[in-house]
Amino acid sequence: MLLIALTGMVQALTEHWRQGSALLGGSLLVAAVLRGVLPPARAGLLAIRGRVVDVVCYTVFGIAVLLLALTITRGSLTVG
Image (cartoon, rainbow, N blue to C red):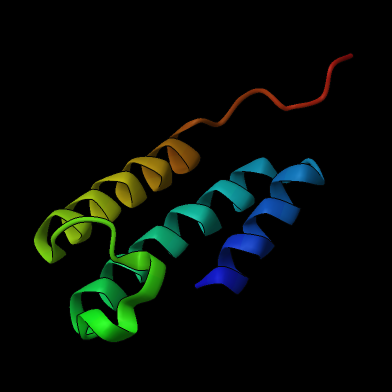
């Protein structure tokens, strides 16, 4: 999951922000799955609140980022 997020950040910083955003959204969805299946002792920093709240938050934010990345088709991060 961390490798996916890091790859997404690199993509976003190298002007491929749609692909980077999609990878970041995907990493949030992977985090939701991992938080749902791992026991609390193994969840580590994925465990912030209760399991259900964590899974719902990771899923909602992951889907929101993916939808934004896939639906915004114009613009770029560069100026000029």
